[in-house]
Image (cartoon, rainbow, N blue to C red; front, side):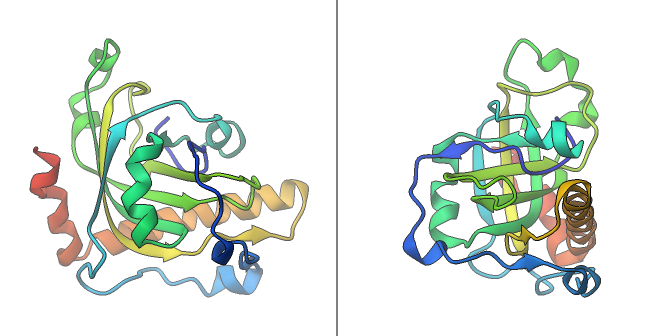
Length: 206
């Protein structure tokens, strides 16, 4: 846990018909043309979007396949976001709150507001049939934080979910490359004053 995105926590929602269309395909031209910063200079409606819940176990694929574990929230935590935002990759801030017997293993640096990147959707790479919300906090934690409370403030949209036409090692490398780009875009976008101020939003103090 503590590095990035695609370890699903299932949500018991069927896919709406409008979202059953093919996902955009990742291509070299798409990768080369990706911007370093996304979104306006300050968050616009429907952002910021608040998420919170207790971190639970997913399937472990983000860590096993990609070397980038994620935090997974309960199904009910994403109900509001799923109603106002389209599937894709997003950026914002998150904070972990100690709430169980393992919390003593977390350092004070683990328990502050940190930049994050997250995905919302059905993850075409793994052919999920249920909606997932997967949050990667850009920080190396001293220990995992299953059972701890997590709050996230979603501030903007990076890109749609992508499908991949490559196979085997090449496919995995393309996915990892996109994830690393997502992380850079998130950090660059959050560095703007209109976004950086949300790191001290009262939501994280409540």
